[in-house]
Image (cartoon, rainbow, N blue to C red; front, top):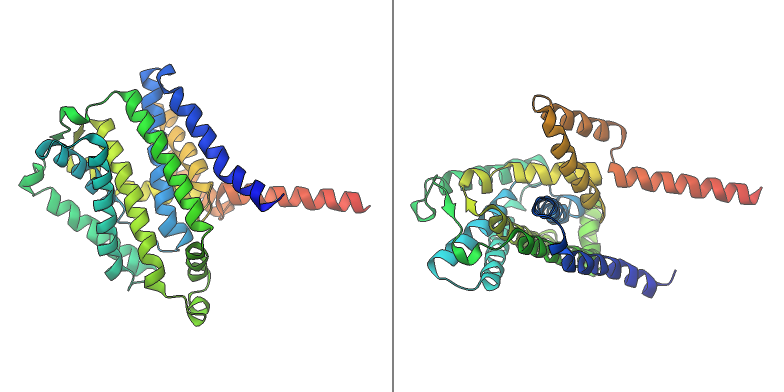
Length: 318
């Protein structure tokens, strides 16, 4: 298969799927639109985290900050300035990217578990600040103003566009020279440094892009929720969900977060009927994947495909 055809498939398939979903958005009922919006937002969150945690090998637990900033910035700008919705969401995403740069510079001096604990500490500190900040109504609910109160089907369309932008952006970055340096740092930092790859200089734009996409996800989440609370938007569960989804699907892969998000979302949806055992079911599933399929479900599928291809080649030789 030629490189040109690979690029057409790599970018064309997501675009075609997104166009079909976008123009059929109003043909689904409200419940389905809400479910798909939640699913696509989880995919976006996981893909954005995977840039840092999967391709970059930097296990961050601070992405809940970007979700919260994107959500609250959208609501506050709409309330205080009354700007149009789309520019407001773009500004909210840009603010999250800026905060991503600010946080990355000190955090990238840490490595391994120290980075995880450091990012978690900043997330907890941000939660404590927001829950006591009167400007954002502290622990009270912050209602999204009428400018942001769009229909569920329109929110669904926003989630489709955001997922498409996220997919194309990440594929382009991973295939770029920056992506190659990023993976080199993850696989062998000392070796990458010996050929001139600078750790902080390489990771800073990746953190910024991850913050941008996560902040945009937070903005759409605000539209879906209609009313924000610090407990809901600055919740560390967002960071944990992103990590769990990527581990199940496959860390550092392009399709892993998509597959993992689909499994986790619907596992939670249908295990909710067993309310006393829902968390246990998810935990057991995660443990099984980590224990028997450490490279995730995408890794399992890849190994299976290679084994079949090898077996077929052996049969042809005979």
